[in-house]
Image 1 (cartoon, one colour):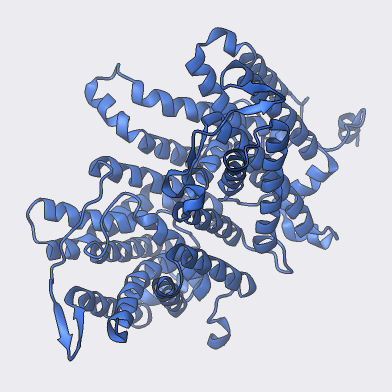
Image 2 (tube, chains in turn purple, blue):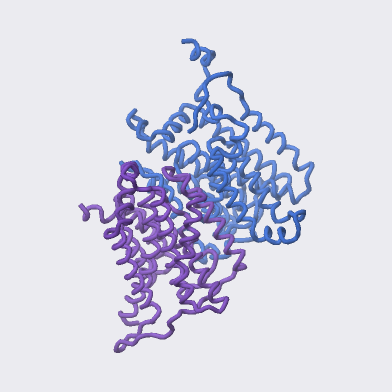
Length: 284
Length: 350
């Protein structure tokens, strides 16, 4: 196969990963909560699109709705359960794991344990000279780039972004400056969940939907966030892009099974020797 | 930790619970029919897995989301040995399972625990979970170890020429192993070694300042837990007559976490209790038919949802677990080393 579609596939795969990792990274670094239910938020996003298709509504509408639906669910969960877990990272891990279990099994019960596929809103491919690339994957890459830029603008150029960063930096001081840290946290959590939902919605045409689709994403994006370094926006993106690209590229070179194992081992060892993340030196 | 009341005589409830459970377990095979004996044996074997998690998390504060890795790899090793080179003697396979668990846990500890820096809890949790997930993927794709299907129809364990069938004999054997390991672990965590572990759990940095080699302590206890998980995995494989990739993965690993959290962290009997209650709930929920057919239909497929919600409720409202209902904080934390005569009185005097 020629090089262009290959790199294009890598790009598309990494793009999905960046969306998942970004949502997880925002929640982890802003609130110190490692959200084990993040993979299930991805699943819920995918499921929303599936429900739309099932009812005869075009899938693109489902993809637009998915982030909002999942953000709403995230907000609800934050209000009911997650907010009790701030400043208790272990309880947060276990609590979100429990939520993940309940969500995953609920979707499994609804799907009946089968695999379903969803059709992409854009079928066909663009042709550049000899190389042709799928239209839908192009759209995914463009949307991801757009979302990244919007996130960056939100964090650095808006009042809410300032409040978010202030709460991350020093929650007590932020609170005494009149910022409602509770509300900022709730919004942040909903925002991160929404990103997962968007990723889930965009990825359904590329994967088939099943109850367990979120689990591999969860573990890989955890690694991505730790690779990039907690508490940094660009770190999460870089880490996610790196993990996404490696795990998409390696199976072309060596056996897929070994490739997966290799990605994990390398990531863990890098994180061990560089716990602040790969970009930590570059940032200073 | 919530407030610990230090006044008043110490009521000892834990030994009562322990003895009650044992007394309850001993005559089971004479009361129940075969199906239930096999079910109870499975619970006993899983209790070993739960104890191994309780040892690392409840006593040393190492968040291991990968106990199933040791459980499963030991099971696979024993199963491969039994099918490929026809070794079925329990006296070889069981110690070997333990050894595999021990060595593998040491290797994992070398990656996630050892080192100059104190690794963050999150890193340890993710590292162990990743290991478990990666090896599950490996087992699923590796046809020599059976791929997706695992290895089924294992031969029975033998002691000399005697074949150990699942049923009464297997039950008592598993129970005996559980009691021995339980007592050994109980002795370990109540010794001076256990005191150091409790210190590490509460304030790892400070123990380091005292001059303890914190990482070595954690490595030792992690490897020992690996050994217990290994023994459990070996027994489980031969009891079920089957090993599969599911026995390696994060699902079973987190199941172990669930057992212990639900039963009560940091009390060994809590782990055993958690296994019994959760396994029984998992079995009983889909059978409930008194609430109408709609509820039953929901529970048939949806009982893990209920389980997840139960766990969430435990983490939110009762972090000490079931055992916390009957055992106070002071007893849960307990005393260490040999009890000195009149130690309690001396503390009260000045």
